[in-house]
Length: 148
Image (cartoon, rainbow, N blue to C red; front, side, top):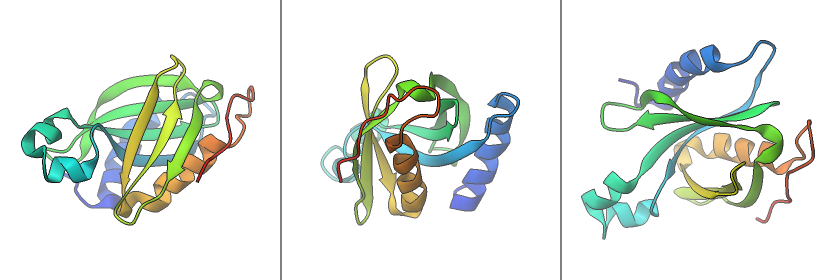
């Protein structure tokens, strides 16, 4: 039941390693939340807000972006690969680091926009993911600029 950052990374990396293609390397990775603003889930929305929140471990490689589902209730551990997108079709729309909860918004291959919340424990990792996604992808050049 990993709850510390290092243990979460260790548990996720073990699972992610089996999902990588031969020769594929991880450029950045972060544990993040998708759903309502975490400040609202802690206050106004309470339990309902936490039920609407999904946890993801986002991994960026030179070829793909992997979205591994995670669970918070029994410790942050892998729950299953939700999807993968080609790296060239995922772009960064916005990145706003915060004091406690920062976020970045990405545009996925299917055209959907995801706002992903990053806690300060994972801030450096979230910044790295945003930086890598804000750069032009090696395969095609589909990334957009970063607004900070």
